[in-house]
Length: 210
Image 1 (cartoon, rainbow, N blue to C red):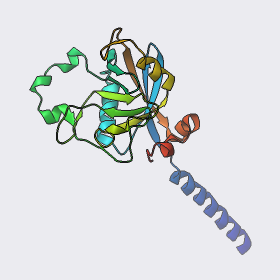
Image 2 (image 1 turned 90 degrees about the vertical axis):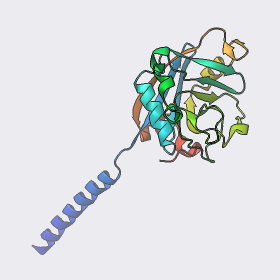
Image 3 (image 1 turned 60 degrees about the vertical axis):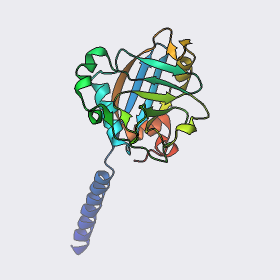
């Protein structure tokens, strides 16, 4: 009888341990950003350790603020810049304080201006505060490291480097595209395990962290 009781208790323990293990391995999610253009799609991941910039970008994208905006500044072998909001979304802009129109910098030494790095544009200011909408993507295969530690890098391109290059080679007048390059931006919530499965261990590769 004692033998059967011991076996039953062991079975209960194993089931409990299994349930605990499943609970402890609860799946986590992240956001994959897709920027669609006439040249194709680019996909980005945003960094957890730049939470202000990450949540702000996602909020604007989910609200459709970037849709039908353009990459308004293109410098080949340097970067493409976009995120200038539409006129209707700029109403009341002049009445906002500087702090309301910008984001505090989240500059981190480990986040470099690598090829495909996504960073926040800004005007010169002592605090290195970011514009709260405009961003740029580094299109230099060697990186643009002279900008390191001066602008907040808050994301990384993971797919669509060929699209980035096509945009970079758009004909420009000075730095302004002669033909506008429009974008739409979509946000998808995806399991981190699936992101790693589809795109490789980008979290380790780009020091994103989990």
